[in-house]
Amino acid sequence: MNYKKYRFIKIRYFFANAVKQSSVFGLLFAILLITSCKKDKEDPYLETWKQQNEKAFSDLAFNSYYTELRMSGGYDASIYYRVIQKGEGKPIYYTSKAEVYYKGWFVVTNNDLNITAGSVFDQRLFDDGVTFNVTVAGGIIEGWKIALQHMVEGDKWEVWIPYRLAYYDEKNLPPGIPGFSTLAFEIELVKAIDLDEFE
Image (tube, rainbow, N blue to C red; front, side, top):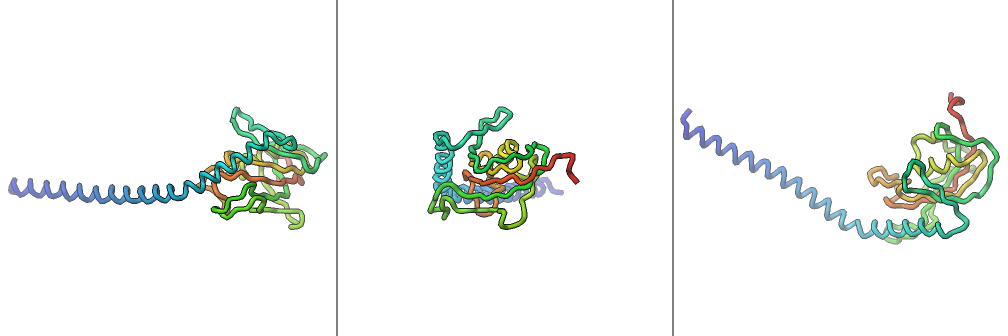
């Protein structure tokens, strides 16, 4: 092949490849820019929501009706609870299964997110006739794990859980629950099933 022709083809290929890569990088940049703009648009609402929920949770430190339970293992996180009904059954452990009735609600109002304090986002109550069955070690939020391991059969607690021990990761949020939500639950431990009782 003629050397000049070969060199021309090589240079043309180089520039064509550069343009192609530039297009890819340009597309990626555009996507990042759009995502960033969308995030900036949503952030003011979520930031206000976050601050509201953090304040609602921290205010419980000054409420004598609630007791703090700290997460074990050196983590700087805790929940608050108050006893509605005291049980006398057997305790529950990390390896146990639990049958519970529960109700969960939001603790603050935010008109931008169309959420009202006290509005229920999920429940499984005695009237439904079917308990909610969970394994303490998995499948539930960290705040529930802390609470359940301090309860006995027959206990009914009101539990407040900060977002760090609930749905902190916005990628795994249940429908209808924004990120940074402090959540309140009424939890009644109906039955504790030990590891050696599993079917």
